[in-house]
Length: 149
Image 1 (cartoon, rainbow, N blue to C red):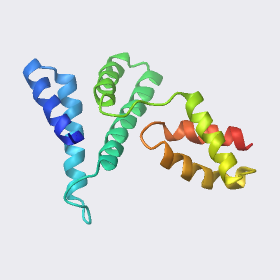
Image 2 (image 1 turned 135 degrees about the horizontal axis):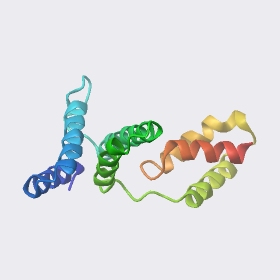
Image 3 (image 1 turned 60 degrees about the vertical axis):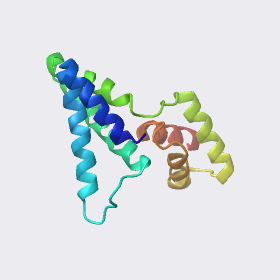
Image 4 (image 1 turned 60 degrees about the horizontal axis):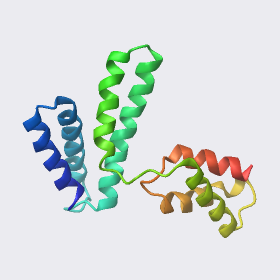
């Protein structure tokens, strides 16, 4: 079952349960799916990889908002954003721990024979493809820098 169908099913459940936070998050994802479908040059159907990227983008936007709200001392605005993150993360594959990502980074560095920071782009590209949807890009970049330095 595609993520779009799962999102629609959860939307129906949220409507029946009158869960406004979940409904708001799911409607935003649905809108992002529709927008991606109607972009010029887009295929008629989204691949699962594209769907995951869209949901990851939605989660990242909310995490950024939470960080800003907490910096400004606005717990009242951060709480619903965190609830939306929890709703959206159920559609993403299980995230890997920092140790698991670190192991993949080290294996990739030895595979490619990378020796310094000049190889960071090469390593990042391979690791990002291997861990698509399972790790945050910032965490991957930080670990690659740490191991190449």
